[in-house]
Length: 329
Image (cartoon, rainbow, N blue to C red):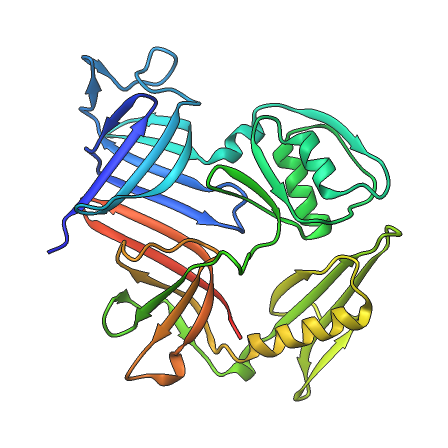
């Protein structure tokens, strides 16, 4: 029988008495979050948890959350306390290392034809960071937080940002050379697959947007979509359905067209969307690949990228809610 374990470390204090933990992690979030619920009789050194500077825990304290089945516990969240609520239960809301990118405002600029790394080095403060090799052109940020700069990079240049192992990553949603592949049998080690929708690929209204910043500071944007039983690649945005954005800086138009056409053809073959529930093991992170197998429904099989993982652990048991992205060719 699986025996669930939870362990929370806040500052120098470690404890395992919790009602529930929910950690939400995705490259779409920019900020990963964790909600910790504790009984309202929680004390340490005869001091109860209260709100404010006199409380045992306070805003900005470091947090590490582990969960798993005896004897193994995995880190499911690392970050800082953002807020504490004390009522019938105690609720501690936390954010990952991106919390540090919200604490101060900055005014920074980089000249024309600057690299992404130049800008990130200027705004990251004490947070470790890495970025893809890309030219972003002239950029200025005035009296904004570093997190707001990252939001602008996502909005304008489609550059994804998230924290992985306390390091800020700026650039891509998926890094295929480091992704783990985890196998799930829909009839054996999946708790609930009702959140997965298996549909005919012809029903998927998907647009793939290809963006390529050029060294002369221009940007090429092309779109691939399915129309009248064929793949269309053009400058026209059909503005419909789901959208994947891929970035290939300094690529030619023909290279972009070939890439987004192939990407769309892979997506049209998925026939799946949504999420499923699994046990806490094997552990999955966004960016990993999930291989689904099924003896009863062969059409549901395939390998898919992981967009988001919500991990829950507490008095009602443990689970991972794994949201899938496109199929891997």
